[in-house]
Structure formats: C-alpha cells, structure tokens
Length: 297
Image (cartoon, rainbow, N blue to C red):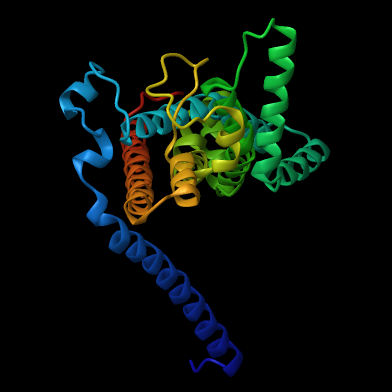
C-alpha cells in the first residue's frame, strides 16, 4: 500500500528529529572525551595519595576527585533511599486506589512540582537549613542530609508519575486475570502488576538518579563545599562532582585546571552510566525472580 505524502513527510520529520538528537548526544560525548581523556590519570582522582590508601580511608585526598566521587555516590544513594519508598507508594495509590477526582487533582499537582526549577528547591532547602540552625542552637548546618532531602523532593514527582503511568498502561486482561482466579487486590499488585510494569518504573528511577547526580544548584546551596573530604556522617559537608565542575570551570587559572574540569565531567558521565547499567541489571534480576514467585492464589 502506497503511503500518502503527509505520511511520508511525517516519517521523514520523525527520522530527522531522532537523528538530530542522536547526533547531538554523540557530539556532546565526543567533545567531553576529546577534551577530558588526557586528564584521566590517577593523580586527577587521588592526587598525591596512593590509591589503596585513599580507598581504605587511611589518608585524606587533597587536590583529587576521590572525595567528590564518594560524595556524589553517597548523595545519590541517600536521595533515592528517601524518595523511592514514598514515590512508589504514591504512584501505586494514584494508579490503583485513588478516586478519579483525587487522581486528577494530585496528578496535576505532581506535574506542577516536576516543573519547579531546581534553584527554587535549592533555596527552599537552604531556608530549611537556616530555620533549623536558628531553632536548634546553631547545631544544624548545610550538610549531606539536607541536600539529599532537597534532591528527594526534586525527583519525587518523576518517580510518582512514572510509577502511576506504568501501572495504568497495563492491559485490562492482565489486570483481571489474577482477581478472576481469587487473588486479592494487594497480591494482584505485588505479584502481577508491579513485575509487569518494572520497565516503566525503572525508567523513572534512572531519570531520577541522573537528576540527583547532576543538579548543581541544589547541592551548591544545601551542603556541597570545595574541600570537605569524605563525609563522616549525614550531618557533615561533602564534595560533589557537579559542584567541582562548576567551581573549576568558572574559577580556573590556567589550561591545566580547565582540563581537570573536563576530566571531572567525563568521570561524572561514567559514574552515571555505571549507575544506569546497575539499575538495568536490577530490573532484569527482579523480572527473572518474579517469574518464579510462588503461586499467590
């Protein structure tokens, strides 16, 4: 069957847009690789400290990226640990339990929250820090916990909406099979619907992790400092790769320091890629296990 001219134009436009996005992605990655690969040396990460001593926390690293890498990793883990349970529970409620009127209102509010600029969330976290510092005798300062809470609030709408949409997009036949065989609503959700919607939910988690790893505005206002070292607790300051990149790119005194910023950007990209691959691995592992769960009926 011959396609009409509008169909051909639409197909050409879609392919052109896809190729443009892919080209832009490869251009950005290629630019970072060309600019930063020469800076990827052990000295960039560990400074003048032996790598084994740094990894075993025997000596503190100064002038290297190891504390910033550790701080970024801890920040992502803590933010996701705070946002994930609430986000999944809220998404399940909206998709499976909320009345239609409540669902429309809450979905609209979460869509608004997802569009709030990160600088506003950072200022909110900074205001909370000032409030706590004032009313708790000056013992609360910008720290890892405040940054993680702010980032969790920032990515929460993504997790909620992707969980809701992933559950609502499941076919009706899949939804009705287990209840028809006698399964309760809770068993239907945890044994059938959630495993079937893992792909969409994991996509939202990957987006949330990427946002936690790269959002400079929030961490700059709520706890990131230049020379904090490895965070000793959730109430201490920390270093982060986005803040290091911003600081070095804006305050560099010569080409070597600018090259360090490119190297840090490349390391941040590698760190995000590792987290994404790890997330996909967890998705496949969970999907494989849910296929062999005991019969819930």
